[in-house]
Each structure stands twice: as C-alpha cells, then as structure tokens.
Length: 462
Ligand code: ARG
Image (tube, rainbow, N blue to C red; front, side, top):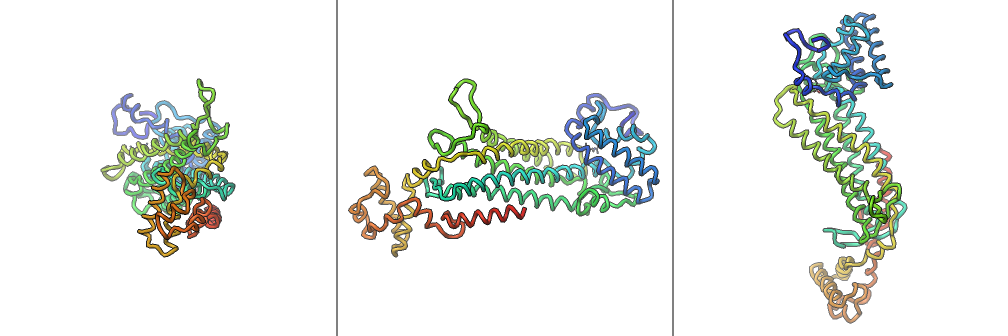
C-alpha cells in the first residue's frame, strides 16, 4: 500500500478494478491550486497550535510552493496510481520534503473537509468569472438598445403580433433577467463565503485545537462552518450554482431562439456578422446562426447537469458518502460550458445588424393597433367592455375588406360605432401607440431612455 492514504488495517492493496472506479484525478486535478492553498492554511494552524516546529512549518510551506510552481508550468501531474487530487498532492509533497515532515500535514484534516472547502473556493472564483461574462452580454444588449432607440418592432404574445414595441425595450427585456442572474451569482457567493468547512475533519471536527476561522480567513472566506457534519456533507452550494448556470443557459436560449427566428428569410429582422456565423459545406448561399443554436442546445445540457446533481443528493444520509464524488463533473461542465458559450454569444449579439425598416413596416400589421382603438374609446368615456367589442368589430371589418385598421373609411368607422370619429386615426400609427404607453416600465421612448439609465446604474453597482 505504498503511496496510499490508508493501509494500516489492509492486508493487500485495492484491486485494479476498484482503483479504476475510484480514480478522480482526471477531473479533480484542476483543484490543485486550491488544495495547495488549503494545505498552506492548514500548515499555519498546525504551527499556531504548536503541532509543527518552525523548521517543519517552513519546510512544508517551501514544498507546497514548489508544487504550486510546478503546477503552474505544467510539469506537475498526477500518477496513474493516484486516486484523487488530495492523495496525489500528498504523495508529491512527500517526495519534495520527505516522509517525516510531509507526513505531519494530514493531522486534523480529512479529504472530506478538504474537498468541500476547495470545491467551494474553486466555484467562487468561477462564479466571479461567470458574473463578468454575463455582464459583458448585458452590456452588448445595452449598447444595441442604445443604438436603436426609436426603432419600432412588432411585439408578440403567443408569437402572434400583439402590440408595437420599441426594439430597445425588447432587447432590454433580455438584459434584466441576465442582470438578475449576475445578482444570483453574487448572492450565492456571499452565502458560500460564510461557510468554510476546513476544520470539520471527516465529520466530527478536530481534537487538535486547530482554528477553522483562521483557515477560513486565509482562504478568503468570511467564516467557517457552524456544524462539521453539515460542513462535510452539504452540497446545496453545488446544486444552487448549477441552478444559476442552468438559469443563465435558459435565459440565453430564449434570446438565441429569437435570433434564429429573426435571421430567417421570413422574418428578415437581423443579419449576422460573417465572423459570428457559419456556412454550409454544400449550400454556398447558407449563413447559419450556429452560435445561437449551440446556445439553445447547451441550455439542455446545463439543465441536465442540475437534474443529475439533485438526483445524486436526494435521500443521501449524513455525513460524507462517496456518492458525493459525483458532485464535481456536472458543475465543472456547467461552468466550462458557459465560459466558452458566453463570449461567443456576446460577440454575436454585439454585431447583430437590425433591419429596422422592415421591423417598422411590420409593426402596425396584423391589427396590432386594435388595443389602441379600444383605449382611445375608453378615453372618450366608453366602458372598456364596449370598447373591446367595437375595436374587435373594426378588425372583423378590416378582414372583410382586406385592409389595415388605419385604412377603414370614415363611413366604415361610423357604421361600427357612433363613438368612432375620424379622430381615432391619431392613435393608428405604431409611433403613436408606442409613445402612448408612457407609464413606468412602458415602451414609450422616454420611458425606455429612463430604463436604459436605470439599467446602466444597476450594471455599475455590480
Ligand atoms: N475524492 C473524494 C470526493 O471528491 C474525496 C475523498 C473522500 N473520500 C473518502 N473516502 N472519504 O468526494
């Protein structure tokens, strides 16, 4: 049992099949810098507790620093017989500083409190990266909204023409949920920061007088676990981050789906920049929205990672169980996926070219101003129930005549209702309709300008 973390009570080494099943270095090796930081902090509290001489302490720190340098230059690698990152680094430390000094570091800690802490530290760093990447996307949407203030498009419900809206208003409707995702990442981080499990040991804490708060502070946490069983067994922090990444994927996929539709011949609302779209190996004319499609596809993968994690955690008894080794790959995958997807998606959004003439032309079509007729009637004192009926009758008459609402004759209007004077035509333009929706949160240009200012102020708070 040479090189193993246990062995005293075993007569023989593990079978190769067990080793093959057990091994996690191919996915947990990325935790190396965090494991080394944890070991440094742990050496410091062992020293403070009088369990390491000054010389041994210094030698351990030296050895850990050497391993850190070798990891950074790529020369540090786990061996084929290493089970996990923790075992591999202990073995490598022993070869660097010798078994006598190196063998003192494991006192008072377990891989259970180690892995829970390192995993948190790793995810906290990546949550910050993700927040920056999502903010870049929000800023790309903001820039497009700013550039197109005034452009009008068909607003839809049920994918049918509903009411005209500003293109900027629509784009910002994608920005706000993404900004909430950034806030979710920050809320998550603040919660995780207060709960460093180092010091929890295998499950029951340590008898060696070590200071978990000192380790927590050194590792950038604001506090240590209040309960050592919870510290080692809880993985809600993983599931919660997997949820936030899935939510980001879902939010991005809703915009992706619209970009895909908008880029069709039938919509013709956007053209994709050449550098952010792909061609076809057989059809020379094709320009495909692959980034948006990959975004839509990867959302499914992010949702799957969350579902898989929750299934792993369901009904798992306290405290640590080896099932928990299954917690890493899904959320590593979610983080990796977004770190590749978001920069590409942001580039695509930033370079979208909108055909605002086409959008403006379509905006009033499909009787999307019928609500404006009804609300105009309400302002003339007509009860909304009646106004709705009258506006509906206008639509029916238009369909019979094959015209749009503003093309109904004065006679047609008067025949439908005596309240319908020609003055109603004042509201029968997309511009008039949009400008009239001027309550807070509405699509009127002044309100959207205010909204843009509110969005940038919120961005700068983050
Ligand atoms: N590699 C394990 C994990 O990722 C940590 C090791 C804990 N193993 C153990 N037998 N207690 O969860």
